[in-house]
Amino acid sequence: MFNKRFTRKSNAFSKKLRHHERALALTIMYYNYCWLPYPKTRICREIGEVLKQKQATPAMEIGLTDRVWEISDLLELTDAYLADVKASERSASTDLVAGPTVDNGQEAFWVYSSEQHNFAKIHTAECVNCNQGTGRGGGGAKYGKWHGCETLEEATKLAEHLQPHDNSICKMCLGSYRKSGYRGPSAAPNRNPSRKLLN
Image (cartoon, rainbow, N blue to C red; front, side, top):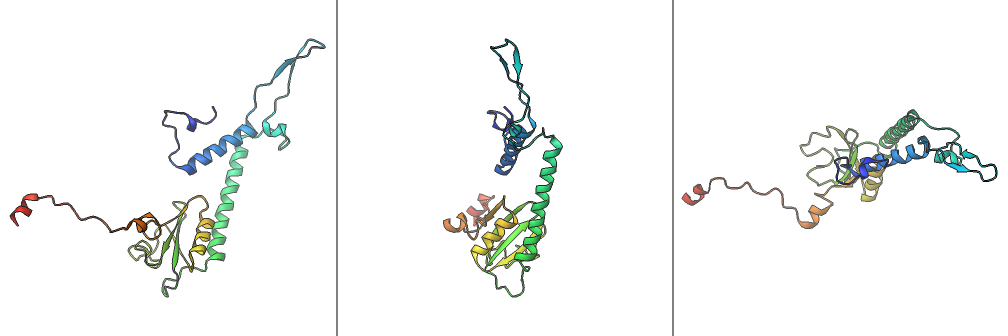
């Protein structure tokens, strides 16, 4: 009743799991801290009067807060959370990683993190998308950064630290394409069959 994204047969669905989780988190916070239920009424049998209970949010009932929150309070919490995420990303790029070493090529795995698109992906050094941390065309990263790692475990921990909500492995070098035997793009179809007959 509070979240339109759970309604059947509507176009108000979440197109990504990350968006659905955050919409649900906002709904839960609003229900517990901002929403005031209708006051419950009961009849006192001793005096015969109708008594109303005090209006309070669920968080106030169990003692988590002593006031009704506003939408501005939720926005302040959201801004503080985003500031913490940005600070952790900066500390990860300075403390955990000394920077990509493209020249020597000692790293076996590379993590590509994009702050613009908010995702991180793990590649091997020989992957065509990685190319020893120089990208597909060899021109480096346009919207993110390459971070070199020696082992897959270090690369996984770094990707989870840089982008905890959206991190994965490259399907070309580590995922399903490699297991099923990726053979590259298919050949262009012959659009002139009569030429083949003439040859």
